[in-house]
Length: 259
Length: 369
Ligand code: SF4
Ligand code: SF4
Ligand code: SF4
Ligand code: SF4
Image (cartoon, rainbow over all chains, first blue to last red):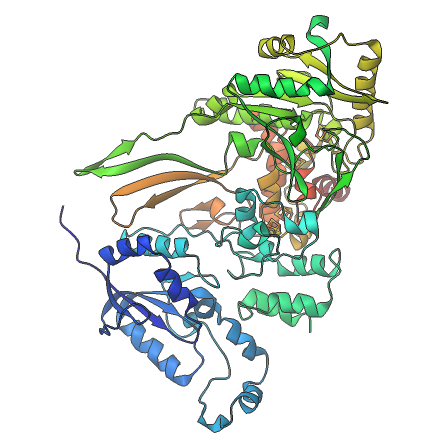
């Protein structure tokens, strides 16, 4: 059996908190298998080695919030065969996309002593709005098992087993008692893509929507339930849809209905 | 079979659990967990939901205090026994690379021996339906068949119906006439707390013979029959008659679009339905590509991938997905398996986060027909 040449992996960060990259380090034992299978050619969180492309696969964390980032992502795209975005920031814009609903210059004046030193864009946008993306891995943060699955699928040239159905399916597969039905707690699970394994409902909280909209999100039906039986006010419903994935189109449109 | 009927005192119920455990069964019974009654492993009657009832409506469930000492005073648990007989995730086989080919690794766990205690009529009917699905026809599911063959069934008849129950209209309950090993009716009369027991199989008779028991009185038989009648008469919901033919003729009903506005395609109804059996296969490799395994996972007709065929998915609209679920349950199932796919347990109504009610949707389709 011929051994295949090790694919070269790069991990890049844009506007984000580093949490998703850290999921890769969090893989611990499995990480050794990853380093056996790929050559980590660029990953500042893990190694000082700063090697240049070309890459076979690049993982991108973070959203595009500055003109410099918008330029850099184009260069990275040119230097890699496959580009996989990881996390809510890279796939929808992240929590920083809250700026998309307001005037960013207002923040600059409040936060910075010299706003004129700051070069920023009006919006925080996902990578796919700037360059072609081969696979989007959702989550805030991503689930390390899903990350390994995507890398594994890429290395073995198969389709990743990443479902796009609702979080509720994972919740039921896990055997969790539905917090919305049995406790009256608002839960975004029915409109959120599976991925975490049903973490929050299993600890008696509603789903926060970390994995973004599921494949066919009927956010209006859920918002009606929140406003009706669960007696929430418009502001609470708006805030539910306006968090880590505020800029994902389905969540964005729903939140705009509750101004 | 009058000799197969007897009365067991509440204080002697523990002996039943002990005898079953002695025979190598793992007793699984209703138990309170996370604010709900679930089927879970138990060691004896003290683990049962004493004095607990349940309140249910569309998208709503709460536990209640009954104010008595009944152990089976609730109705059906949250999830059916399919979670035990047909687990949500199940490894089917694994393989490892061997030269230019591969070798199948034999690593199946032995099938568990469950004693299911507190099974309701609707649950048992659902199990008999899944038997047809998994064991009927040329492609029997050996794992299911083995788990099913290994199990001991103690059914309990309902003394009242939950607000979402409609087994009476589906002729699947609340009484049970076949398919069990032992049938119990729980009777509290003043200070007397007993179980009217009836064996339904040789296994059941053998167990009953070993339990401390007295002869059943006329009053006990009447109390049990009154309870069954109350459970049937108290049902607030019913499935309309002729629903199989109605739905088959209403595939273009405008009502499907109406449901789709409310339905989120979240799949909860299919997950909790005790007869739903759809699954998907997941093949995974390890990073080196030297090992592979195949897992069967519950899937749902509400997912887009479920109807994916070469080139795309067949059921892209919410209306088409809800129609698939409802027409399969209530109509095509009859052609496929000779019975309705709905036993009227009401779980899909309770655990739908927005409370969509299959009996109400059927009525609405009839009205628009
Ligand atoms: S708790 Fe949330 S995610 Fe889980 S089934 Fe209920 S609505 Fe869905
Ligand atoms: S369709 Fe609903 S009521 Fe009928 S068996 Fe399934 S869960 Fe129970
Ligand atoms: S549907 Fe019938 S058998 Fe099932 S819990 Fe309700 S009354 Fe009992
Ligand atoms: S009927 Fe209810 S539980 Fe079923 S998919 Fe629609 S919203 Fe979810």
